[in-house]
Structure formats: C-alpha cells, structure tokens
Image (cartoon, rainbow, N blue to C red; front, side, top):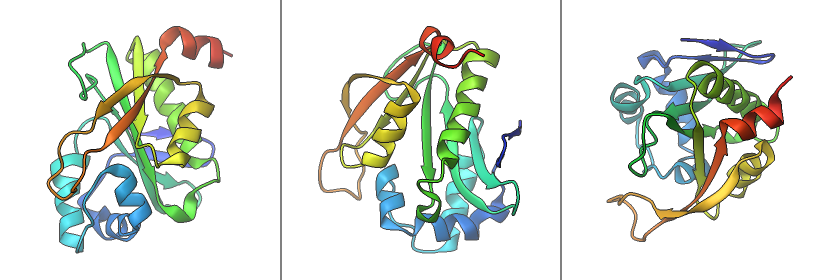
Length: 181
C-alpha cells in the first residue's frame, strides 16, 4: 500500500534503498534517536531493510518532487512494546537530519494516523520517544498525543545503559475531535 500527501509519497521499502538508508542513518542523532546501532556499511543497511523494513506497516518517506528518500514512518500492529490487543497500534518514525523542521514528519504521521484510525479502525495508537529526543517529543505532543507513562526499552546489546521511553497515546475519539473535517 502506498500513500500520497501534498509533498510526500509513503511507499514500501526496496533493497535498492540500502545506500540511501545507510547515508541517512549514519548520523548519530538519527540512529541513536531510533535506538539502533551505528551502521558500519551499506550491507548492514540492506540487511535492516530485508529483516525489518520490508515488513507490513513500514513506509519509506520520499519527497514527491525529487523522489529522494528522507526517512521512515511505521505503524506496528498490535502495539508491540507491551501486550495489547490488535485494536491498537504503535507509531514509529525517523527523518534524516537535513529534513528536520520542515513539517515533513508531521505530514507523514497525519497520513498514517488517518490510515490507522479510519481504515484499520484502531481504538488507540501509541507513540514514544527517548527523553533526550526533544524533536520527537515536540512532534508527538504537537499532534495531540497524551502522556500515558514510561517503559524500559528492550535490552540492546550495543548500549551500556538502560533506556526509558516516554509513552503517549491518541484514541480514536481524540483523533476525531482534533482532525475531523
């Protein structure tokens, strides 16, 4: 499934995206914000595409005008951080640093929220961020998500510390009251 917004195309990933993915996620502010290890080469990026990004609910964010891949948005169902039912989803996203503060992620997330609530009929969609990721926090709260707690991020062998995630939720009713036309 592919989506189109005013400035973006949200499309499925391709193994051909590996070089661009490697370039975008080589930035520590991008890969650390996602909780990922640093990619050392294009082959690692290709493996990530094959093992993770080709799955359902993951979309490459591409600029409509240039065709340039700039990030990713995902809607995981069911919400996977805790045991929840299939009527809930979890939003994830990242954007290459050169594209921050242009409204691209807000545009992409609005599209995926519409899909999640109106096409998939989810009752809740969750989002989270690491405490130091102020850009994600600003986006999540700007979109209307409400704080709902914290949780420990799953153990990552490449990190030498525990990471707490700040969690937020948006209900279908919240979405409808905020964005109904």
